[in-house]
Image (cartoon, rainbow, N blue to C red; front, top):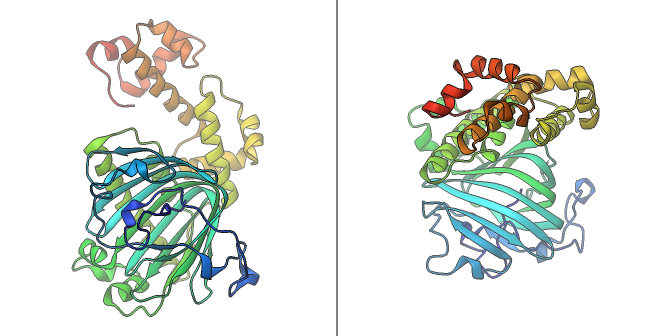
Length: 383
């Protein structure tokens, strides 16, 4: 979940050299508020990360694959959009960085830390939103305010200029998205309508927020769906960047709504950690086994929920029933087979889990309003 700077890559200023494989340091002595810290660290020995508003293109003329731990570096069209895969003796995974606008960028990561990664971080005049389906860690401000990053979960961090470094720690598999938006970019986004923002953010853009504010957000179904959309996106090039930009703005809007309701003491219909974790596990199980899926009872047992609890949480978070989700997975695979193979319609039906070709035909007609043969003949719509 943490996007960290690899050793020797200009960590103090080059936010864009972010890689998921920086080496953390184990704790040596307990810092302030250690009684509440699950990952106490020695603040005097931590590597420093500075997130800058102006993000340059990746390392200029330097070869990014020469950075320790970087195995592959893939430019994704735009100079500020790239993906890094890496492996070290303490971490492995990949990280995608996408610069969306001046002072507005996103990071999507799937990184596993075999030991806690600890850094100090400064992000002057930056607002951050973090959503994770998996992971562990925490964020501690210099004042001792602590936010738990244990996933699945969401958090918002608002840091005015001139704040002392905060401490971040991440551990285990971190799967999520980080959004960074500078105060000026937020002003542009809400130009003339700043009154729509929560009071805390109005103070932030007015320059009157006295200190960093870090809070967990209710884990809403919408936020989880946005994360799944980003994780599952297969687009490339400019189309991918545009999708990330649209989802990033949607995430900000829903995060601000959650923050506003939290400030006003209103109840927000978020999913519990247990329910969210169960639904995410169920989605992964069904993605791997949609041809012959487990029964609802077996699926609920495997993800640690009751049958009724799974059905209710699945509909709330995913926006459809378990059976509709399985049908969508089957249709996606069926379209791929119709487009890419010479298999007969009956063979495609059996390959995606239908016991009878007639059942497959009914499902295709209901979904697309035409037959599988006609879909193959005229070209395939998106699933």
